[in-house]
Image (cartoon, rainbow, N blue to C red; front, side, top):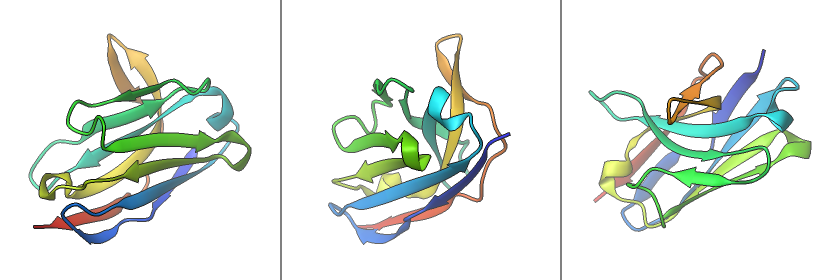
Length: 121
């Protein structure tokens, strides 16, 4: 079973940048796709980005061109570089191991505590 710890969130002005980190335990990390999700106040959790074990990347349209997902398997760590941040990016960000199910990325492990990202206008 994989355990996940997110970090790197904070308060940033619109147009700024943040880099989130996801530290994972368990052997699943190196062989599984990993993804980022976010949940804004009053909204459902939504998928943000995925990186496969081979390094292929996929992004939600809302973050394409602004966010970059990456991973270092030897460190069991995944990152989300977020540039040109907008107030609508404000949310708690979570990472998870993911599987592709019916054309959607589905989480497969218990959620961590997440990390809060707040973008001021």
